[in-house]
View 1 (cartoon, rainbow, N blue to C red):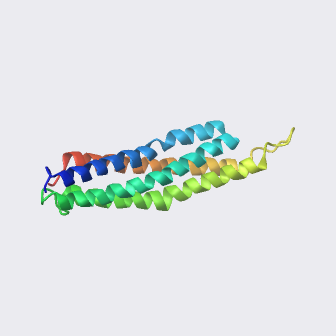
View 2 (view 1 turned 30 degrees about the vertical axis):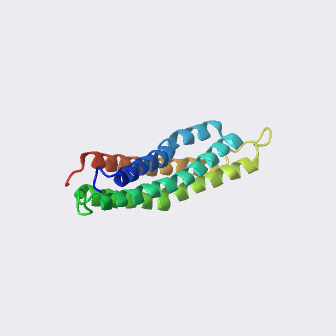
Length: 171
């Protein structure tokens, strides 16, 4: 087989295709968050919910990237090995990114959507009401900052992994 084999090339195409769909589906989530924040209310909530659904679909393609990557190493006829720095380090950083995504970012986004749902359910403030915004507004702002920090870390990890796959240090 090796790098010139048809099976290797097919798996490589699937690996790249899954990366495009999976990571492409989540790399611009910050723009959706900005639009949700700008629109507020039911419209902002709808944007957040749609983006969350797209991200959930994208995650399966992101999982497949890892599986196809493992297959590529196995099909490479020792051109690549799991002991190559770029391979094992990419795999380790991928697992760190999954931990950040599932352990930190996803729960934060779920809290954001929950807060948005609470605010929408409350409806507009009564005419002439004073006393400032409800506490959910401040919580939403705090959770948004957390989500932005986690997303930035994931994007950095993505770029580092991509650079390692292109330049293949330690191979």
